[in-house]
Amino acid sequence: MLTLRQMRYFDALAAARHFGKAAELTHVSQPALSAQIMEMEEHLGVKLVERSRAGVFLTVKGEEVLAQVRSILADVGRLEESARTNTGTLEGRVRLGVIPTLAPYLVPYLRERYPAIDIELKESLTDRLIADLGDGRLDAVVAALPVDGDGIVTRALFSDRFYMAVAENDRQVLMSPMTEEQVDISQLLLLEEGHCLRDQALAVCNTAGKRQLLSFGATSMATLLQMVANGMGMTLIPEIAIPSEAARNAIRIVPFAAPEPSREIGLIWRRSNPRPRDMDAFANAISACAREVSRDAAAAGRGAAKAAPLPAA
Picture (cartoon, rainbow, N blue to C red):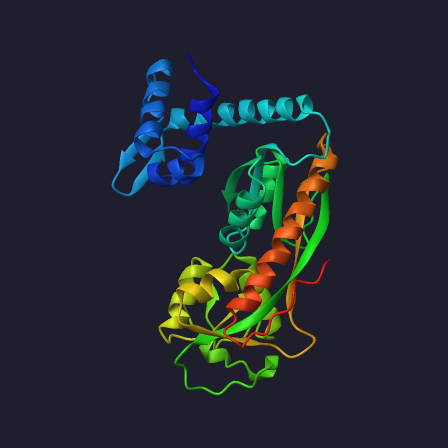
């Protein structure tokens, strides 16, 4: 018999195109996920995926099945939502999409402080997350505002300030607090195209269209900070990332002069969601965790950042 578990595993595998990554997304072991996919193939009598050293590819039949599976999962998600009471309590499963420059730093706090919430996490770029939200594959999205779209509700949560990160042994003298005009564009490292933090960094440093930027971009904030720690350049770091990244990398955090550049972080959900009070309660929980991260950021700033608590939106 085909099960919802198998369909969810197949959906995750189709998104990740890698058995190990799909197993992480679904919180199971790789052998368990692989076994369920094989059982699904046996039950349907078709080959759904092609396994190779380069990764996982869907067969033509697999692509057809995927469309049906995602439609079924979306219907199940809507059924589960409508069956829950609109209590405003922080419990139960939440299919949450979070952008990559927030997820590693915010979600651990949420899981630790609110264990009754079963967070089913998807980490991706904003456009993809909003598309999944509209298709019913996600309950809510945490991303940088503004976010436009039909049939969605947005609620501002907190302002995430930007700082400059340089190598701890960097001999370049940066005034603290620094101004945006002090940023050496030729040393500015950025995330690759598609990440909203890249666009935000360009806006802060007024560099859009300039060609003296370094020619390569990192795929994650963690990679970016490792490059900085190894003296390859400097980069903007959001305040929410400071506690984790300052602890694992030899970097120095330099604040900007007022008015400090920042990004506005918000929670986005469908207007048709039958649990608006639950979404409000979840938004309050995220804001509380952000304030806690900010306090940790102040402690992790190594005396250079002097970060104050995140201002409420």
